[in-house]
Image 1 (cartoon, rainbow, N blue to C red):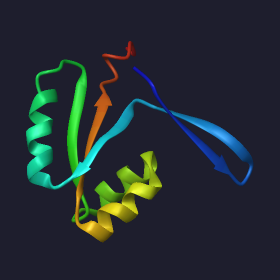
Image 2: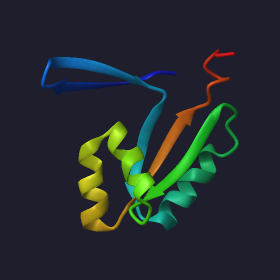
Image 3: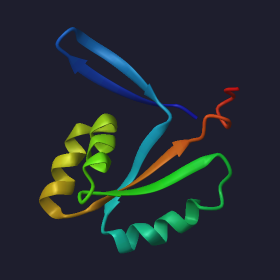
Image 4: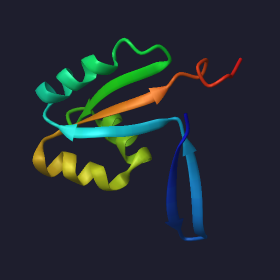
Length: 91
């Protein structure tokens, strides 16, 4: 599974390839319920990232910089799913 991010930067358009996607933006309590649906899936790393940790904000910004503003203004969290490297065929 590959998620692509199309961006237009100072040097023109580019495509970033990530094995991570933001699935939902909501309160931590509601994301915990959604997280339980993915917790039994082999090969997926499921995280809830919130604004109280600066590293979480950097990780969110790497995938979608616009989401950081929403998380900060409305005090919400993000459900992020990543494919594990072993699941993607790396050694």
